[in-house]
Length: 143
Length: 140
Image (cartoon, each protein chain N blue to C red):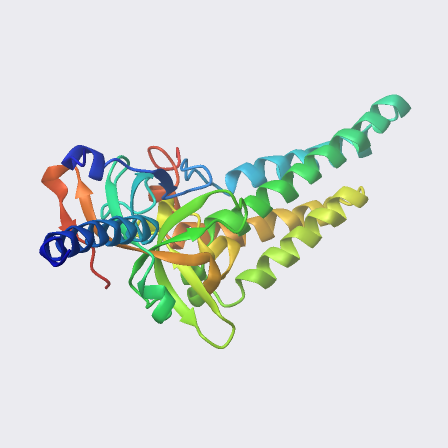
């Protein structure tokens, strides 16, 4: 029997999909790992302990890899085409920042780590100017 | 027996049209369907649990138009169907771009790029459930 109920019964589900609808992004995440790289390099340079210095190199490479990861997430997931219209050099900025992170991963150069921090700050400005602190943190970025 | 001819013909006509109606209903069944929405990326137009009447006739005749709400095969997970709005159609490459109405909570062509037009077969026509939200889905 055809009833209204059977006519309206869905045959399948369709997805108004979002990868993860958490929508939480903050360049601070990349910055903290990059600060960690800088501090590790300074500690490495100040130490004579061979074992400690080896650990510094190892941990710094891990942290630099995390910087690259967090930058990628911001680049791919937070920034959208409308942001590219506002910042036509967005891709170049991220490309350079990722390269700076690679340099920090490969070297024990404190200047490279400072350069990376300043590049993350540039991205942070774009994030702020596009409403990131209000839109992509739960209660705004903690001050 | 000419006397039986009239009623018999009427019976044949009757059975024939019943079969015709049944065949049309089966065919329409494949071109007309009801689906249920999950996810929030089309809010506030479509909410999770909304049911949509969808049809697969229009796009046999013409390509989708920007603003129409469609079902499209997910290019990253082919066994899944997405419901999104058409934001752009490029007839020369045979592709369309999809976007969720809730742009900040949507993964769509801005992330996975355009989708081929052959993966866009169904057009959403009416939101038919819940009763309080019944309404025609218009392009914009």
